[in-house]
Image (cartoon, rainbow, N blue to C red; front, side, top):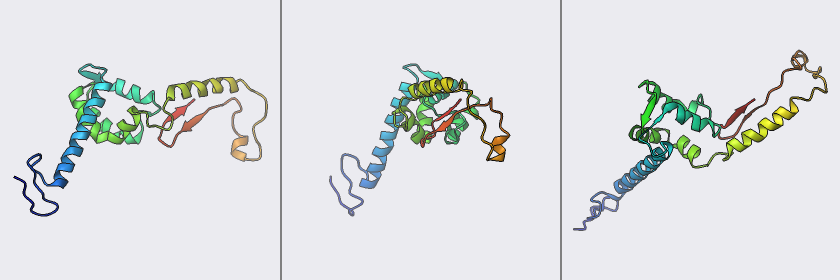
Length: 165
């Protein structure tokens, strides 16, 4: 029951597939298992989740809903004009957006605790925007024209996490 046709086409009783096909199949099953676990986690044990909740969870990690890397996710949800996604549908969507979901929900982003980071930066922003001392630089003509009452902070990490105040 163990036949060898060539080094790459060994058939075994366990998988009845050539080794390279067996590897592909195990990899596919691994992705499916990951997607299923991720979908269950995102749905918080329920059978569905609202699209808005998915994007809110992403934004809480610093990834804005208009991030171009989420184009496939938008296509999956917008084309169907869906307000909610079932766990089963989400399990199918996750592999098409795998890298984003892996980083987002496996704490693999540059700033894993984005809510804490956002809170600290917002606190610094609120404190420093009260400072009215100093003058607008005049050695650069465009900056010289700037309204001295305007103040903002904008940050983007290497992973695309964004904060705009």
